[in-house]
Image 1 (cartoon, rainbow, N blue to C red):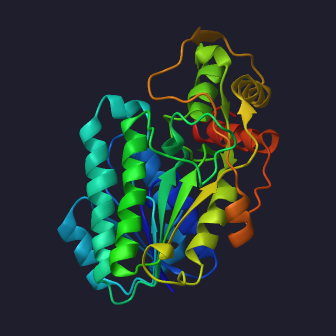
Image 2: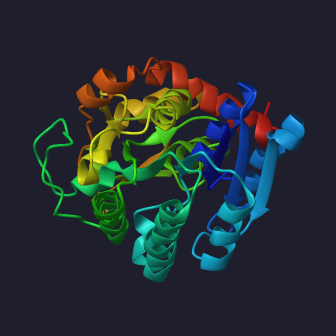
Image 3: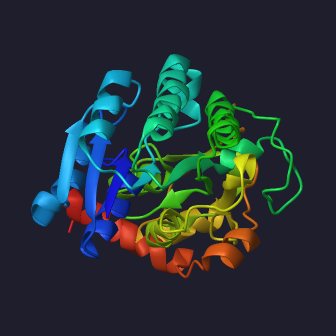
Length: 327
């Protein structure tokens, strides 16, 4: 079966593509290799897919380019779509809002339109985010909660993706699943995320910035657990029913929020060094806590994360040391 993975040079995209290729699937991947963070890391990820030979085809293009997206769908017999490409990062959305609308709204629309007109696509999965819960205070976050109080443009674009997808399911009877990711981490993770930033600073003996004076909790979810959930969602039978009921949204998280200070302590332990901490107030666009209710995805897809922070953080730190030749 041929799978399309958008954002294939990204953290989750590469890991998902690699798992599909390892089990014998054909993968077409698209990524624009933008410079939001170092392009070298994206190329390193793509290099992990080259050993699979002709089973993997890479197309360097932007999903906001309608012509490129349409050409991709026309040239390949895509059966399943895993749409992970997006402009990520809450804080960067304060600096470059147009990038988020182009990638997360225009790009998402292009994928929906291509799926709508495809004769071969049976079922599609796309990336949403726990950020859509915004200012919600009731924990854990449930898919039934209201999500109309975004606290960042990034969150607003991800909620827009969900609403657009629901409307396309309603109008064109498409089978679509949205996944609300909760703080994904692991080897080959993004340089703008806390595991990388903290690990890099601690190993260099530099101070780390601790926002909200450490009074934050995150539902850190290890990459292998996430990939298992993404592929399970992509492998679903096309959703039954008619119209909007063929669109579903799932939380995909660890179901165990961790204190930020405990997270830092885990990195300190794996790095073998203590961190110098600069305590700061909450950043605009951040939320105090994320906590995923995963009852729905567990019941429907058997999703059951198994990697604890104590297991996952050392694997990330070890990878970081190898990549930067610190061992």
